[in-house]
Length: 231
Image (cartoon, rainbow, N blue to C red; front, side, top):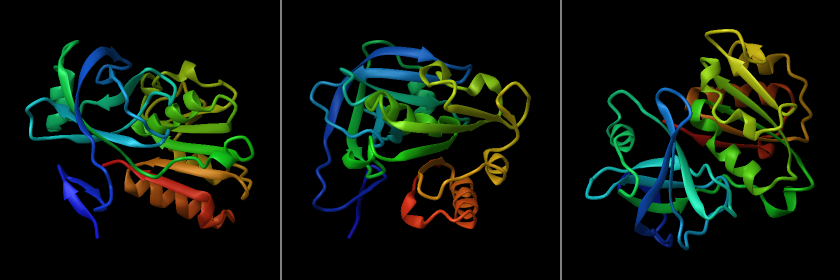
């Protein structure tokens, strides 16, 4: 049976690690989206996992996929400030050296070791849902991947220079200037898909359901689809 702590579901045999970690760097990648880097110390994780983060002495934490790689000597998360989002607004006001309460890591949307160099991957994300894929690519430089990233505006192509330009497809829904003008789901309708590819999808639940439906209709088996829901 799952239990809940700080709004995070976990199983009783899970180990919840809570620690205070100092902010090393805050880097804005758009007007309202930023990368927070904080001390890693001995925190061990698999690319694709997430942590819960809040400021010290706050009663609130929010889950963020880890943005950095497994071998980096720091932890990074990608944060979009949300109107009415208490945690994201608190994080935006943070300063270098300030302490964060970090719990985790959590999550099982990871890549099996035996698949890293033997499978082809398509990563589909909307907005900050690109975070776990950034971690995958930093962690596994030889992975065979394509990223399909759905955003509203070109300025939301966060750190796009970190990806091979031949493997990165930017879908912009409110302006031209990306690789495709329209939503990710519209792009997928005409995209040639190999059912043997492994698909990882990260974004809001409605986008994930729509993407899964498209993939199923194109013959992709459910066991080749993984997802991480952003709220």
